Length: 276
Image: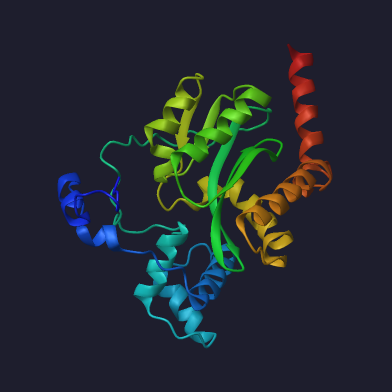
């Protein structure tokens, strides 16, 4: 928008566009090495103790000899898209244009392939920076239907992977997400509704609602991400992609009686076809 070679000054261009002059000259600073290390530790603690908020996390860090303030912990948690999975006051404001859908999975027996798909995003640490991983899972079989590593939290990434899954696996009855802005945005919800799916969203602070996808994050991070130090986004995409392929086709799952997610999915699909 701003043309630094234009005959109009940058200040005048900013005024005409309704932009702050400070924002035009601002150059974003990379996340410091100290903050990256702290974010990595916060991610590990959150995976182990998802009920911990900023205060509890700070106390835990202090006990480990890491000097940090609660406000800084809270700032980093927001940057990572992380919040405590426990009852909490309604301090965050929903986007006024984003509709929140009711949670539909309570007391629902999930026994069929493509009955319920669960979608979520998590923080992924790298050697110098971080990215976000969004994944879509068939709840009954634990099969990862699609995933994407991106540098931002935007609705376009969620829409992209669910459309990939629609094209490859068909249409589920219910799509369940949390209340993150990337999932409540019209760009995503419209893509789901257009296929005739029901939208379901986790209640705020209701950790049980999110348990299906949290199990995948634990596996991905402890079996893949935490063992590496990705140099760049491309390396993260390739390695996580390889892990997801292995998770689907070769990793035996205790909840599936030793079957792999792909085997479980195909078995469930076959049963549906036989019943039809």
